[in-house]
Image (tube, rainbow, N blue to C red; front, side, top):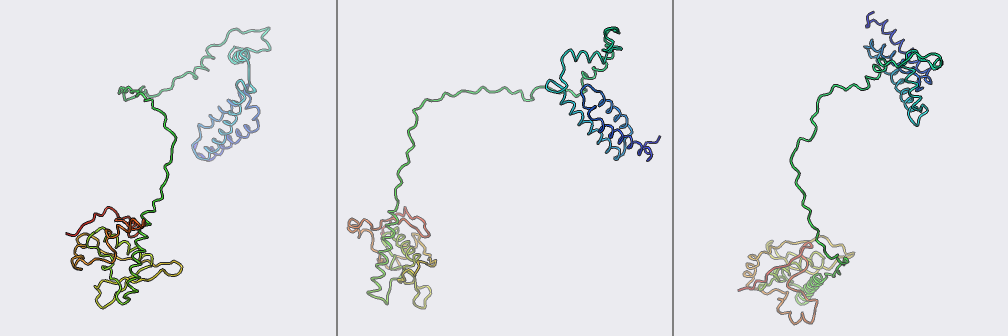
Length: 327
């Protein structure tokens, strides 16, 4: 019969469904370890599988095999020394004889014995368990045969145990801030005195910060003025029509609530520009006195400013500026 014939395929699916129904109805018999019903059912399924070519037949074949595999798992759980099918060595020999002795029957063993074990049948049934599969040869061992280098054991030096961990005392580094605050107060006091004596002619920026003797003190004066402008204590005003004229410094005072708008100014601070400004101003001495004139006061007032200011414009640090004496 043509295997592609729809009638043949319909009959094949019908046989599969019949086997599946039989397997579900006799589950208890199939999962018994001493029963060969499961093996016979697998052989029937294999016989039908020879004619399977279409997907519909493959689907019913897969359903049947899944059911039989589940039965096989349940049977295997009953085997072994912990399972319900545990047996002694004498039981094993008895069952082997029942399968392979010609005409052996326990009921007639006392009166009739047909003799020895049929070794041919026994050997042919178990020989398939010992067949060696055909596999490609493999090379044993590693590819890299490089000799391993012997590790040198370094001797550990015995040292005295370290002492307890001690955290050093943290010092309050507020000296630089105190010096800067003192310089700002001093500059503010100078601006106030100038306003009281001559309110019509306040300090120009160059008059307030100029120092022809020391470039480092000139830089400190500029930074001190920038901090005062930033805090809102001082400010700049342009007086006159000339836009290039140097602005004057005026007293403003902090606004209420302490909210100060952002204020800043830019001044060229290189050594060449400082010398040019001092020459243009005819070596004019600024309102902030030179540090040498305050030596006596520094001994009496420990809060006087030093040659290095601890704060820079925008919160930076200024230090290491060498004093340059005008020659």
